[in-house]
Image 1 (cartoon, helix red, strand yellow):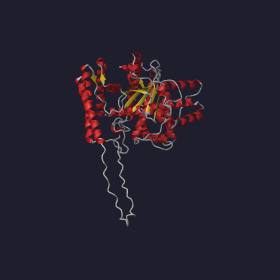
Image 2 (tube, one colour):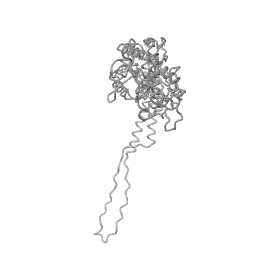
Image 3 (spheres, helix red, strand yellow):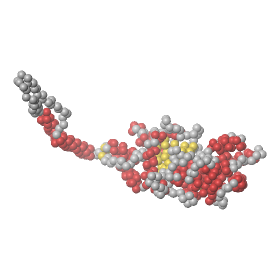
Length: 537
């Protein structure tokens, strides 16, 4: 009571001083008289004009206390506030309350991690009751993670680049309304799981954080963690194969190095000071993958799950995972690896061309080279190994060959000039439909199979075309312009001067395909992927 009595006395004194200042300020003052205006002397008394002296009106503006008065009342206000805070703290601390005094640094731009959101909630609460000791200790543990996170942002360049890319993606209007989980694979890869449903208890209101809701969130997070870890193994295997096969021959710089491996570019061109981060987004379902109104759809016009595609316009590899019970034989890793290779080729093309975005590639590089580079397979422990052989295409190619033989025909082969020189899917379909009178979808399937087989043939270990294949890929990554650029680059790299040279290459490729690939048993490359629980280890 003594403290409140003292506070009341101070408040009354302040009010009295304020009233006294008002009284002294508003006391009327006599206005100063102005001298009469000077007039010319009149000729006579009767002709002298009457002069009336007008007094200026007294103008009073809004009350503005003197600086000393303002300083006095500001000191009184601060004293009362400090006294109230000290009294509350003394009272609350005395009754077992705890105060959370930390703040998240402004340098931390992405606030979607659970430990950051927990600290934000604790900052907003400020005080924790005596029976909330567990929540207070959890907030303190989250604050330790915030400090470690902030230290990594300052010291680790690749970590900072991934966080910056994650923050940009979270603010992208095409991902509006999605909850995200991030997983950092081996640099330079960042994998993200996106869903409309809550993926964290902090996505729920306090009244909705029931035991049932927490169990549902834990199931989603477990599935997301397994899928992201599985995909990360594919990215690593494809990246290692590309770097091992062509890194030295093409002088490819590390994408996660400073300035994306190209510090030699001038200042106006140099980009990605912290390195390039390649992003792969896994959508929980088709509803999560649907963009907000006003944006084009991510998806092609087909249903089902197990879909993946690299989008050059957004630099993102997008995919829909299969459920754990739907593990189609020999499917996922080869198709996902092909898109991962296409993403890598896209970024290495930018690296060699002053970071300019290239036009989408739909010919031999995408269907053949990327499929060959992405031909990986999982073992029983969940590790991805590069094999170079796409099981489904090997099976389908042999099936079409047997069907043609039963009908008295032979399996149709694209000329190497057509395989290597194609630049668009439309041109491939048009040529095959006209030349062979086949359905367009069958033509595209045969082109994909044979483009992969050609890449396999050109880079086989004992083949004479390995160096020429590397020269061709270097020319393609340099993005030469003009019609027929892919065919011209292929002919120059393999030193094909005329039709006879093309025919010799056609004969060698046809012999390899019929005598080697057609005799390979596809069963070892059609094994089902391991269950997702393998990636819990």
